Amino acid sequence: MLKTVKVYARKAWHWLTSMRTALALLFLLAVAAIPGALLPQRSLNEGNVQEYLESNGRLAEIYDRLQLFDVFSSSWFTAIYMLLLISLVGCILPRTWDHYKALRAPVVRAPRNLSRLAHHGQGSIDKPAAEVEADARRLLKGWKITAYTPAEDRAGAASIAAEKGYIREFFNLVFHLGLVCVIVTAGLGRLFYYEGHVIVVTDGEQSSQNSMFCNTATANYDSFRAGANFDGTGLSTFCFEAHDFSADYLPNGQAEMFRSNISYALGDDINTDPATWEDYELRVNHPLRIAGDRVYLQGHGFAPTFSVKWPNGETRTQTVQWRPDDPTFFLSSGVMRFDPPAGMFPDLYERRQNQLAIQGLFAPTAEWSGENGELLTSAYPAMRDPAVAIDIYRGDNGLDTGVGQSLFSLDTSLMHSGQLQRIERVNLQAGDTVTLDDGTEVTFDGASEFANYQISHDPSQVWVLVATSITLVALVGSLMIRRRRIWVRFYPQPDGGTRVETGGLARTDRAGWGSEYEVFHNKLLGIEETDEEDEVYFDDEDRD
Image (cartoon, rainbow, N blue to C red):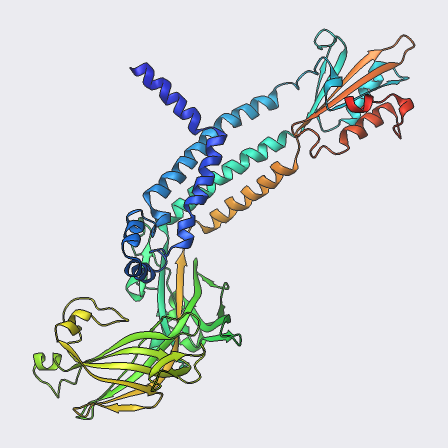
């Protein structure tokens, strides 16, 4: 029984470490990555995944069970690249040993019949065999050469065997080793990386607390994820302040370029006057690199501003980002929640029952449709004519329930239970005010733009780049360099001359061999141009 297990284990190991299996696993890994490109991924946008689940029902549930929303961290994707890693290592080790032995071994002796080779030629020289051999060695300078006596040669004549292109196999091995390094370094990087997103409202005011972010605690992020070995204490200390956000649009509304001017400080400099911080213009694919981190400008949207004036004269103003539902024209949806003044409702329960909530749509450039012009859409992504279509609710808006509330929508259970009741539906343009039944005034003050910044830290990034560069260079080397052999036999003649027979063989035969063999043969025989009288044959077809 144990012997049978060993036999099957050995067969499985040979199968796993074969080059064919490695190529199949590499292809399988590429195919397995396709769902990660076509479906939303939790690691990138949890909201998009949740929306996909809500919109696609049973099919989305099956996808979720198959881990198609977490492709690159799924168990099956991990299994594929781990098998690929083992297969590559299993290929590299024996091939490295074989290459080492090939470097130390003599060049293979010439076959008995050189005329059967694709490259073959013969001719006579008025020189003794020793001088011809010296000429051949001079022409083959840089090649690995092994000389054979008549007793050792298969045809019974003195000969030399020359080989070149050993470095091709070296590059091949380095290429596979580079793939292993890419996988290992990328995997180690995922253990120690961190990445977070923060939304900053760019209101154009210098030193505004709403437009500043400090990378001093994970709690400062709107969303944050990190590797298994990151404990949250190794954040690079820096701050940046977003001064503005601007976008260039084509006439059809398509975005052409995003940019944001920021200022930043590192380490102890964050406690200095922000006016003395260094300036930088963030653009798409032009991140700020600071303290081993990268700050990307990843997206943007709009943050409407509402003011609520209560009957006792107290005012509350909020600016909150709303979610762009239309990625082209930025029709956005969102929610705002307001607590009434404690002076109006001393009783906590009564104050909770008089909370306000605003939910609706925002358009940066309003366009009205419908029979009465009450339906709001957006005609352009830039903020030219901002407007909102909102529902105003009164009651318990969920802030004091102890349950986390969505930033972009109200809890429908509060409305279904009657805890939150709609008291007004209204369309407002910038500066418009609506008065509620109790005298409370709600004003739409306009909107600011917000930008979404991504802060990424990956300690293996440089090593992945180095490994990838080495892999590409090795791949080019393995494709460009040809491993080839040339054999020369010397037949001394009675008149003191020598009849020479040569043959050449490349691993890829004529593909990429070029004229190297012909040049060598002609130079050895002292032939400037080949013609029929020279009796030089380069293959069987020419001789016929």
